[in-house]
Length: 461
Ligand SMILES: [Zn+2]
Picture 1: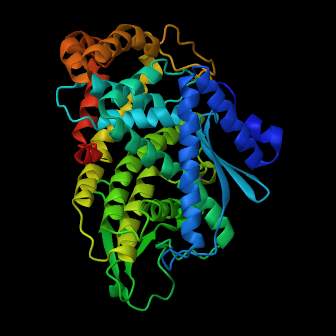
Picture 2 (picture 1 turned 180 degrees about the vertical axis):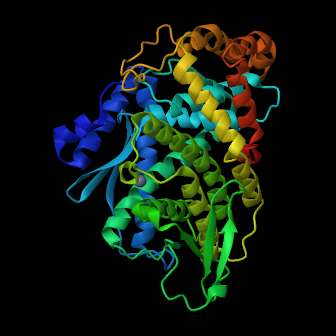
């Protein structure tokens, strides 16, 4: 699949017409045997139907009071080659939401592998570390075994894989629609329960409490909202720059609940939101780490030039809004899913995880592909300004040494048996990726598994 989504938009000038042609071309590609085209066509249509569902909810006025029911959007979702990004293009009153398929597939594979519940499956663990690092340190190299890997995982747990796809991509699409909602409704955002700094002339100092969502995270204030059990999260005024981003995240959470059931959202919808946020936090963690990395090497210092606020703060704000959303739909909601989310959240965003990831990034920059002080080709350069080649790359070696034989075997005897059979030699290979003598891929993979995120939709199989 090599056609860029943007070229369709440029050719037609009308998003609806471009979309029809885009889908027709993808379907033709699939008939000609291109698996990726088929995946992109199905995902585009599936996500488009969720946009439709959301519009219907608004049109019927089935939205909580904090949202403006007059809102509607003519949006089309394009999954495909979108230059490694997720973003929106506006053409008149229509919008095109562009979701980069390669990045989405990496995220889905990462989440799936982190969630596999077999302590001794070191292959899944190491692959999850590889996936994460391939997202955090962007380089223009495709993962050649991605199609086969997804085929293998879908043979094992199709429903789980599907749920991860839906949860992950819905968040990305609804976040983009949240920007459109924000533009349409102006500066008043009752669904956003954030205050950038303490309000002036605060009458009652006792209405302010300190609170921490994460043990290693930011200390916030919380303002009581009279008559409710939740409050307004007070954050540093410096974050006001990203009001739209927080607003779009909170909107995405509402949209997810609204589209997760046919009737009025109930406990089941909230449980689904909590498990979707399990996926979202892994997305925020991976994408946020990538932004931080790119920022560090491009030596950008001004806060305004960063497109999104810190991933950890975004996650705190989401956690804060989960309480509000529950109040809007099922005030006495208590859930096992939230308890789990809290535990995983503590583990994923812990300081030791961050430093392990930093080690992984250092490793990819300097020693991933071959010995020597390298970083990778493409837009990323060494400190001397020289690009660095990566041939043969670690990813191509991984494919030849591990993934080709492993995936062939997994097709014959199943994933778990293939792991047991090949564990020794494959782990030896993973063990050769060392930073200062420490097998960094093995260690990072192990730590990711210990976060404990499990594929809870398995319970429903
Ligand atoms: Zn955004």
